[in-house]
Amino acid sequence: MKILVVGGAGYIGSICTELLLDEGHEAAVFDNLGEGHRRAVDSRAKFIEGDLADRGQIEVALSSVRPDAVMHFAASALVGESMRDPSKYFRNNISNGLNLLDAMVATQVRRLVFSSTCAIFGLPERVPIDETAPARPINPYGESKLAYEKILRWYDEIHGVKFVSLRYFNAAGASGNFGEGHRIETHLIPNVLKAALGQKLHAEIYGTDYETPDGTCVRDYIHIIDLAQAHILALNAGESEYYNLGTGGGSSVHEVIAACRKITGRKIDTVEKPRRLGDPPRLIASSEKIKRELGWKPQFQSLDRIIESAWRWHQKFPNGYED
Image 1: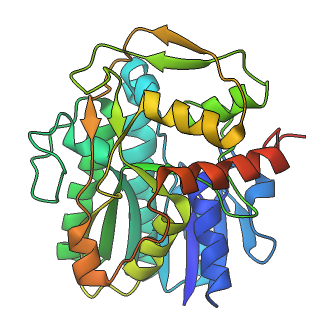
Image 2: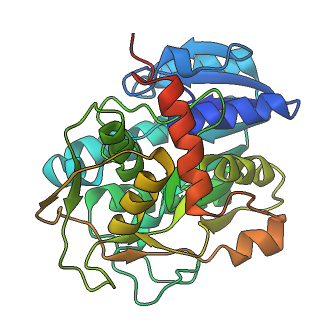
């Protein structure tokens, strides 16, 4: 298939592009490089610099590439920032996403794989969280993604745009070539590894008084390669659908830091800080639906394997994509 990867210069988009190409698909990347990196775009992919805020730019890109499907990763994705600047999140994640959908309708592209999030669920009533759990976001980031999922349903009904929405839990790890190199890094594993590399004085723990076994947040970490494979499987879904993506297990902040110490062999100091606004205590996925319906088979389910791949990449590229 021929795929246009929107936001393909970012962490998840870059590795999905790499795997698409490895599996024999054609891929083009559309990205404004505001958060992504030109060096994160696989050299085998056509690169188009453009911004979803300008519908004309994405329409021109779609007309040029004529893809069979679009993978949509372009979004603002920092929970804390969304609590300070909700306007940015509703504008980027909803308004700009509408530009993409309208451009797809105009150019007769009728298949979309959407990068959604477990943040749509808010404080879950039960874990693991399956697709029937009530969606009650507790931050504008999750609200913006849920709003877009609702919009997708109407574009399917009215315009015939078939979609698969993949609700990620915590993507982590790296491929051999690409990894997690955000300009503003808020994710736990890369920040702990930066401390192991001596680039940070310490790792920060936000909240130690949650109702969890050790008082720190528990998250479901999914290897980026397994996540990318789910996107490729989603291209073959017959009907529009929603799937949760995780491992079904959870690791606390303390457990992640202990695993990083073990794998790196480095001393990693920590500093405890207050809770961050909008952080639920526990988020663990049930991925039984995508396993059953699309045959997804995650290969890297252990936390150690996830951290090992990230550590190899950070050692190889200690400054990420920056010179």
